[in-house]
Structure formats: structure tokens, C-alpha cells
Image (cartoon, one colour):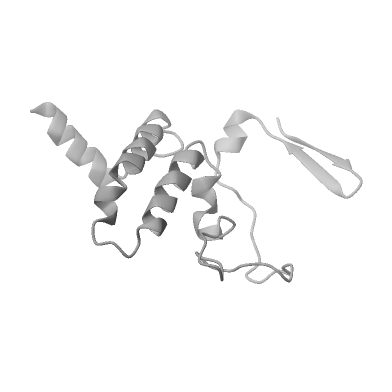
Length: 122
């Protein structure tokens, strides 16, 4: 059973494991007040990856966050090279291994399940 505790300006919400695994029911406004130095987008003005970007936030703040960041940094660092995916194959494999260890957080898509079943039955 979840409950909430307030401490001054802070609010702490305690959840059970089941509740934490459910999709969020919170709505987020399209535009919110942001600090003056807020960076919007994949890359900041200096060309570095923006880890606060909502587009990759759930990936890097997950059970496989370290592996995800390592892979994304490798791709970003080698973006101008035609063989960037060959260069970054090891970080990709490590990220996939981690995701396979956590099937509840990273479920396979239906088309992947079908191809996996086909490959294992032969």
C-alpha cells in the first residue's frame, strides 16, 4: 500500500514493488517553467549529450542505465564515422545482455518474440 509523507516543501511517496512497476498516471504539462540554463534536445550547445533530455531519460535512469549511457556515448562520439555501429558493437551487446536480464522492465516486442521462437525451434 502506498502512502505519502510531507516534510516542508518536499513530498515523499512510498510505493510497493507492484505499484512502482505500473505505468505512471501523472499528466505532465506541455510547457513548464524551466531554469534559465535548461538545455532542450539531444545535444547541448557544446556538442555534449544532454542526459536530462526527456527523450532518453527513462533509458539512462533505468536498471541498464550505465550500459545505455555507454552505448549512446559511443554512438555520439563516432557519429561522423560510417562504421559507428561496428565500433560500438561491444557496448550494444552489453546493453542487450542487461536488458535480457530484466524482461519486466524491457519486454520484447511481438515481432521479436516470433523471430526468437523461430530461431530456437530449429
